[in-house]
Image (tube, rainbow, N blue to C red; front, side):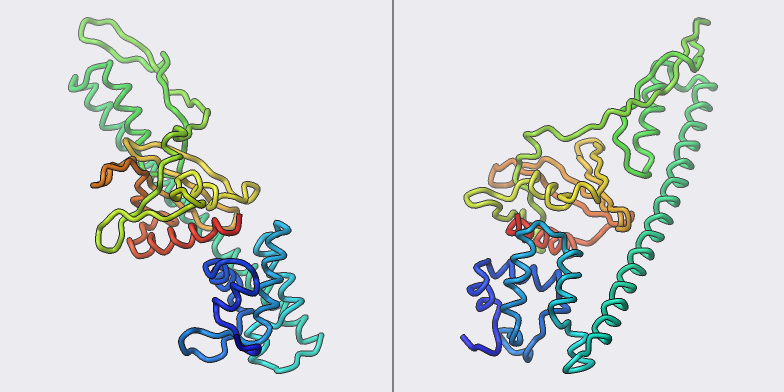
Length: 315
């Protein structure tokens, strides 16, 4: 092992963590991993060993990635600083830190504004669909083309299928709205929200979670030693910082949809469905991923799935 440069494997042996974990460190804090040439295998400059040991130590103290980055900015040179000056004075280091912090805050504000605009657009779209659907049902009821008993169920379907902001409320009927029947009698109903949240059954959350590979085959991943990567572990990893994420489950037909969002981050919607694989295994099929209402392609889903799975080494 060279004392001046290190490979991923070298850093893994020095730090006592897996190569996958070293790669996750690099993804989270790329500005601190200074590369020494781009041959194979990739090698990192002197000091990367101390960097990995420090990151491992800070994660062991349950610090967030943001808190760790703030400490690394003080204790280690970043790639950006290294390119500007070989030796940085304290005033210059402080200036660079302020610039990087300002950049992060600016990006957070931009993401927040984009999320707000998307939420508003989806809300307006949903209200428009509800209004159109209800008007059509009223016209059909007035013309006698829909029975009174069926009208309430159809109104509920309009509310539940209008594509809009995630909600987990159950809708139930109670007497208020008047509906006339053929023999002259009438019943009255209203719609009322039941604010109790809904969740998938434990059996579903315990299922192995799989995606489609690029060749169209079911692809799962190992979880904890001796066990497949389960849906409950995926949910925990993407929303493990409960204080910073709002999370809600909703059901659409046979699909369970998990929606989660941080105060400044994008809205993620993950679609799951119970499936039986060609080998006869019952699994939770991760079939779709929307970010701010934009459906991602299969390559993106595969990358997202693998990156989330890599996080299991840190807990």
